[in-house]
Image (cartoon, rainbow, N blue to C red; front, top):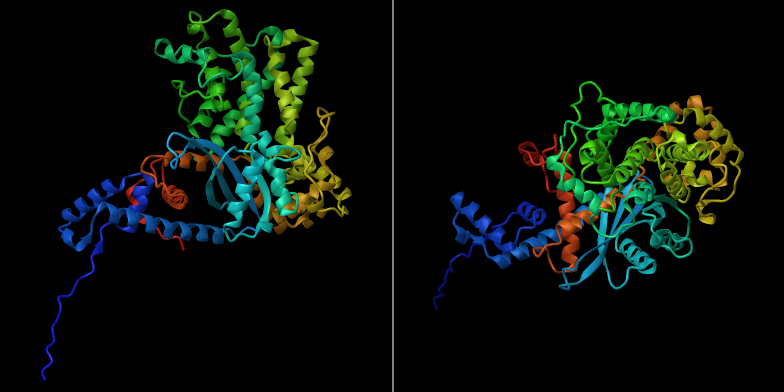
Amino acid sequence: MHTVSVSLPKVSKKMESVPMEACFIADKYAISNRAVTELAAAFRKDGGKNLEEYNLSVNTTGRRRQSARLEKAADITKWQLGDITSKMYALHWDGKLIKSLMHVGKDMERVAVILTGTDGQEVLLSIVGMEGRSTAENEAAKIIQVLNDHPLDTSRIGALVFDTTAVNSGVWSGVVVRLETEFGRSLLQLACRHHIHELIGGASCSIVYGPTTGPNEQLFKRLVNNWSELNHNNYTLVEVTAPQRELTGYIHNTITFLQTWIENSTKETLRHDYLELAELTLLFLGGTVPAGRRSITIKAPGAFHHARWISKTLYTLRWHSFDASLGMYMPPEELEDITSLAVFLAIFYTKAWLTCTSAADAPSNDLALMKNLLKAEASISKDPMKWPAKFLSFVVPARQKLQNHLWYLSERLVSLALFSDRTSSDKQTMRKAMLRYHDATDSPQTRKQEMPASHQLGSKALKGFIGHDSWSMFELLGIDSSFVKLPVAQWTTSDNYRHGKKVVANLPVVKDAAERTLGLATDLNTNKAPKSEEQLQALYRVVKGVREKLHGLATSTEVVTKKSLASISYSWD
């Protein structure tokens, strides 16, 4: 009997037409599966490849992108969590209403949940969707669920970063209280300083511009509509009349600060709107830019939004700069109000805004602003003629708002000032006050962060805010506090002090990380985005990871360069 062997033709495995890296780039730019397939075919053909050797179809591309997305998203989160070397985390969250991808015609509240380490590392945990009404109870439950979905040691969470809406900061049942109850201990409550200053500035702006009634205001539209007709080389500087000599000191101090700030600012701090605010204020007050810096030009007005205090300030300064030309478009009393508001914002708020992101300087900055407002209020009440018209109506609501948001002068947070380079004269007296409470037995687990008493703020120094709870900050941030027992002159030689200074320098006191992440969710909220919640969360992580890699390789304002493209690795391990 003969055995007949039959050899079957060898079936070669087809190759993937879309590389994993291309999947991530397609996600970054929200490119459809069809477009990616067509591009892949064009590149393969141009390279002389036989398309029959590749898996090439719209459905195949879609499956390829889904698997690549899930695989890499898991790698990114695992790598980032493992890369946090600090002892403690800060937990951030913020919400935004965006169009639902799963339910056409409906909106959904999405809450970004972020962890940052005191080493500067940032991890996106989720941009979770909220079902039903966004209440403190629902939001806290979602945040806790997100934390439980990750291999996290929540005992390492030492700080909460949030805006000061009632949903978050409600004394009895806000999100902050609910999270602290879940964790079984009280934490550092780092209220967003941008949000605080927006409330303060907005309180003064509303005196002139009225309450928020819509996305744009008629007054600002007039500036935009008539911008092209103005002589942009004929601008008006602030004028100090003889009776208003008290303003001269404020103006001189602000000019000196702005010149130093512009000169010392780096690429990271020179955000275009911050630089414009500094330059417009400097120009308005009659100052000059530091040597070597470009001359100041007044830019055309951009988008105006009620939620942005900085946009109101920029518009106000522009209005005053061209008040001579704008006289035909508005009555004199409105121009006078805008001029007074511009002076107020320039000498009280520009500096406060530009310096509000520093945790170490936060206590001294808030106390200085409060003292300046109280001093101005007393002076105006005594002799109104020494100040511009309606000045008291700007000072009082601003002071009241700040008085309700003295988070960083609480016993727990005032000790951040020990790491400030601007409080050297206060450190010795603060140290003595700290040592008086050194034997306190309470820990953050048994004490809540309390607001400071609001009386006698005009005469208090930073030492007056120190109390039993001032030691909690060290424990919650994992800082060895033994250096406090040393003379202040020896602190800079202490490893514990240097470590604490680095930790506090990276401590986030604005919710920019959560806001950037919500911006990412808005950018990706297109009809090209996946409809599955699992895929959507993976998309967020991958695109955020790719963006961060490209920005990390950027050597100029141009992020996508030949060098960055050649250097980038899409491996997170």
